[in-house]
Image (tube, rainbow, N blue to C red; front, side, top):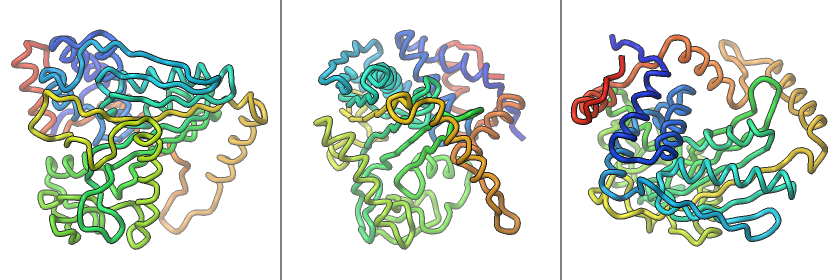
Amino acid sequence: MAKPVQVDDLARFCREVLTAIGADPETARDCTGSMLHGSVHGVDSHGVRLLGHYTRALQGGRLNKSPKLLFTRTRAGSGMLDGDNAQGARATYAATDHACDLASEAGIGAVGITRSSHFGPAGAYALRAAERGMLALVTCNSDSFVRLHDGAERFHGTNPLSIACPAPGNPWLLDMATSAVPFNRVELYRSTGTDLPEGVASDSAGADTQDPHLAEMLAPLGGMFGFKGAGLGGVAEVLSAVLTGMKLSPDIAPMGGDDFSTPRGLGAFVIALDPRAFAGAEIVEAGVKRYLELLRASPARPGRKVMAPGDREWATALERRKNGIILDPVTAAGFSELSRTLGIEPVR
């Protein structure tokens, strides 16, 4: 059985790899931070397994190793951030901070992101805002991989939505793809040789398949009621692409395509809300505390446990920070290759 890798060692390795290929300190910091958020909190599909992909994109020129981010304030509570083809975490952490700054003044801060790229786990940025005392919504679109409800071709991206609310202890944190599963989960299942759950992916003809190697598209969230997931995918599309003037999902080059030299031009969107501008920080804190107490005390079905959004992630993070993280076989092999070619101390 594979040996767990300690979180600090993973962070060290990711930063050193990114620095070794020429990424500036801010890119190495933010890219590592977003990947570690995924791996620590159990969002393995968007964790350190993406290091090889980001490295290739930075080396190939798809991503700017030293982007010059430009923020423009457009109204009291709104602005636009030009990502300069940065690695997505670099642009989105910056946009989140700008949105929080706007919200602290105007009550709400909304920032559209242009010329960005794949940003990994959306929850990393919503959590950043919550840590600053803000409620937040973060979303992006991506290249087409999700069929519409009853559709038989790729249309939306996995188009995640993450919403966070500060709370005593840990925030209320929702982080979800609007597809039945994210495509990175399919790739993870390919690596581990695991069958997909029923009804989450389709083959090239749109027929359901549980074989991750035959999965050519994903189903929208909701199964028989997938029109709801498709509608939520459209929400992400409108905020991330339409409102920012960026590309719609069908117009975005594939994340895993052969061209690693041409920027993909993704959009994203961050909204921050300051509780002080509404009922007030103390009242909001008391309200979410009461809400979570009621939720967690709600009776569960036999053999099940009621959890609030984020509860699974906090428990996973506690366990992984203590005991380490087991890398899937493909990621472990990729790390060994990066260690060898870049002359970096391997993870232990």
